[in-house]
Image (cartoon, rainbow, N blue to C red; front, side, top):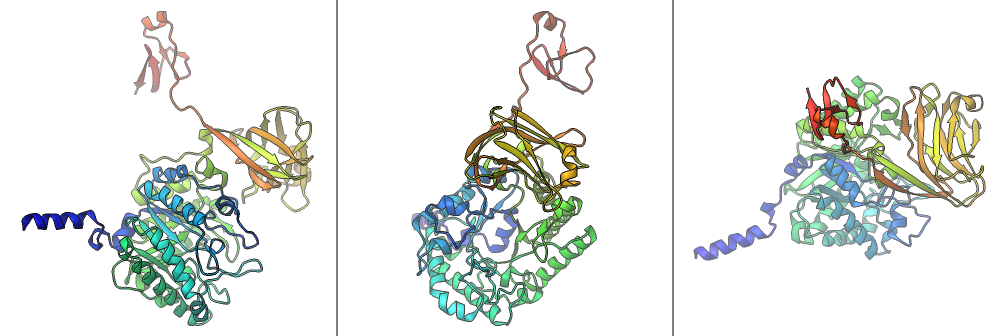
Length: 546
């Protein structure tokens, strides 16, 4: 009898049972700081048909995701990756998912899980606001639910069965920002929108649970209407089951203006979450950022970084206190930065991690300055352009002196030119590239472009052409240099090769006669007669003088 009981216990321990899965509250607590792998698997273009998954994945300008990117986020201290996925271009009329697309989604999920991180997998831009070129198929309306219920449930059945054996670190999210037939944000036109949201949420939970395996106990996420943070949207979201394995989610983008306003906005958000959602189930702020696109575009990181970093620090500290999870929307590593991979906003990443853990000691934040990068630009169109600078914040001529561009050869013979876009439309200047190293003095162009530069490109003047850029830097007013991130503007493709810059202490050769005298050298190999505090080389060994 004793042996039988031991055998049964061993069986229960070897399988993942309900008791083995952490509940939703513990999951949110253990997820740490999250990040969204945005504009990647969620990218879409209804005007095109994809021949490969790579074409689909990169159609919004992001590179194909590699495991090195996820590893970098893990080593920086992030514990969760939200993986948004848009499915409508990869399913047939009945909702059957293309095998190649499901395989690619699984690969990216595995990148996250293999790094020991939590992964949130969802249905993303199958919802959203309609436009002249896009019409979502999932809408918060009862009529839409009746029409698409079967197709929606079949989509989730396929996803759930693909991942049914994954452990508790994989979390499913029902839908992203679902709007009503009028594409109404924040709150629906009528309460029918709330009813439809709850119907879709219930279908999602029921479908996933019935696939069995670990899905019967998996933690699942359902969002408010349009992922809104309004009180009414929170109150109207039902809890689809009473199992302790449901997480509520909403999104929040800023309108800070100042530190005090940021604090008030965050305090109000958390207070409303506590009163209307957190009292019923754990909560994740699945998207937030330092920028907003509505009612007008504004990026506080670019325009008022002090306010942006203050707000991020305060948000993470306050949400952690009450047990609300967070996933930052994109940023931090974007575009070609992801291919290296490196951070282009390392101070933002550090702010989030330090706010949560109290320190960034032991974490890594590589930047573009840690690499020597060679870019190969393949121009395909006459006047095609590659960005040398294309950020949202204009360069002020009072802060920047110019640009230094180094190519692989000097035989381009004005087949290339640097194009400066001034502070307003029509203000432009063109500088021919005639030598291996071309230096552009912004002051020489000031009469043509004004006092700031919106964009700098390297443009072909002959059409098809391949050019290799060895180095491109912006020269600041204090003569320090800032590496350019070269990216596609139009009419070209770009590949890059990155070599890490040496970081180890180079070997210092010491003459024997000097060694006998215990001669001391600095790390540049220069002999020092009166060393102060620092690291030095003596008799072929590293010594520290305090």
